[in-house]
Figure 1: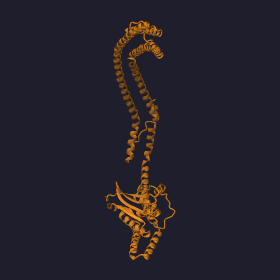
Figure 2: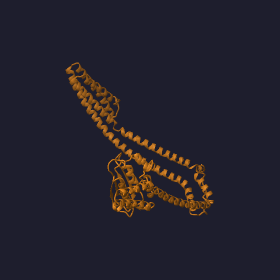
Figure 3: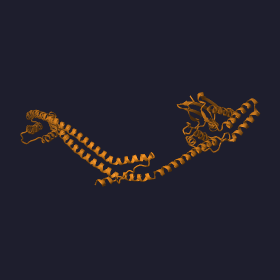
Figure 4: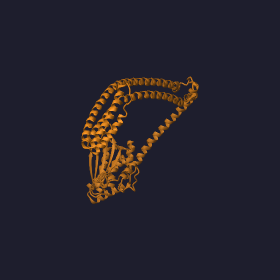
Length: 494
């Protein structure tokens, strides 16, 4: 039987042990519970006699009060109340002992019962005398009934007091028995718990001992020691099956390790190649996105400069051409580099000057910049396309003066760049499409440099390596749009 048990699956062995322990615990708990319940029931019945006597006293008072009320008012309600109290009191005294016994309590209950019957008879006659208008009879009856009422009350109080004294002594004894039972229950439960722990430890040792031996052998193999003594399989359960399989695997483990080493080396080289390709691809993506410049902007701007030279003096034309040259020189020189925020803001200044010359100063440009933050690094051509978007899609389609506000300030550990206009605004649907990369414009404006918002967002995300670096908000139609860019505050910035 022991051999058969040892060869059983672990799940079945665990089930057998669990069921056996559960049955023992359940049997002990039921025995203790029945014992405690028995003592508690006896405790509950200790003062039951006193409670019954109290109820009889209350019922007696109700009969006396009902009789007095009827004699005073002689109404149907008072009479009905008397009949109810009479019936209630009779039902109470029926439970009293009426047999002859040597017990003083039994004799007292028997006397109370007989006196109560006499009292109820006297009360009934008094009520009948009142109904018959026999004043003298019901007056005498009332006096007799009241005398019996007082005597019964004092008799019940005497019996109640004597029983209370005896019941109190019984209660003390039962309370002591209950405490003893509780202590015995605690001791038995502790004994059962200790026994169960010993059984579980013994059972778990039978399972874990071969596992520990197997773990030691596996640890030696992991350290490169393959000349280990094979672990014998003591049973045919899951542990025995695993041990047998391990013994078979030890023979060919060196070949497996060599193959793993070779595979890891190939994987490492493959990973390095993938990282290099990913780096080149990211760089190519940045260069490709930066290279999307629409030549229409260049031609339209130069045409505007030529027209201005014909209509005005050379000084203003020179200033215009100077800003134009700075603008395009920036594009040619900085298009593939990482620049400072200061240089990006200077490019926006050149762009605003050009736009105001071309469109008669329709755009008012305001700046609120923390000078300590503008040395931060940023990809080129980030702010100008956003400002351009404010002009082409926000301000030029509105009536009145257009205002663009550029702010640079610090929020916690980030540099915040805010570009806000008072133009026509955006719908939330358009904002969501811009941020998730699904927005598609029907065609770039002839006055655009060809770099759209999706280009700006993609380059920022590639540069910073995260998605949550830009937000777009608009309160509704004709309430403007605000674009915020969040750059991490580097160690060198304040």
